[in-house]
Amino acid sequence: MVLTVSPGDEVPSSLTRRLSDLLDDAASTGSDTIRVIVEPGRDSEMAPDAFLSRVVASLMKLERLDVEVAYVTWRATPATINYGLPIGPIARKLAETGVAQTLPLIRDDAATVLVGYARHLGQGGEKLHCETIADSERIADGRVAAIEIQPLLVQPGVRGRVARFLPGGWKSGRAVQTGGLNLVVEREGELTDRVVKRSTFYRHHEDWRLVRP
Figure 1: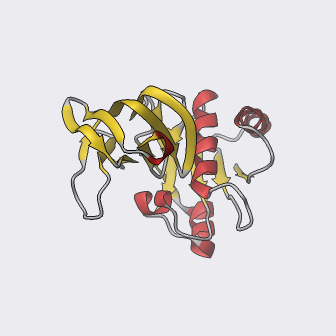
Figure 2: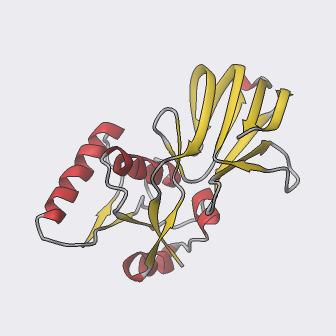
């Protein structure tokens, strides 16, 4: 059974309730496989990857990561690049006919799922004074412009680096953790102003299922 979800005016908790109701309705049909097509739409004010992240986070909270997820956007995003996904009409066709693959699910300690990219930044545009590690390997220790974090398609699951214009410099692990004095977190292009002492993106104990070429 295929369900399509697009952004509404709901907060994350009401999105979770809306998905729960849709999945309950789908279960009543006796369908063995349920696929959710996430389609932010061209006119949505929310960043496409942010909406995809919230849908997957809702499935995680509902303990329904068995549900297949397909992603249809009309422009390239960090998530489409990360996962090698098409856009536009080709994305719609793939969403309807493609095969779901099992991938590591990357989340943080605020129960937010990462599909595109995240950054650890200094508050107010200042440099970040931090220590960052990927598992036990050091990424940064001192003052940096930002830490960039991306999910991986394979184990160990996530990678991070000091922000740079040149390629490379990534270190991978099951978790990327930053501790800092003035740390704020940007997820999928959305900045949280609240200063935290620590932020960790790590591999969830259960994988998710994404329709990919």
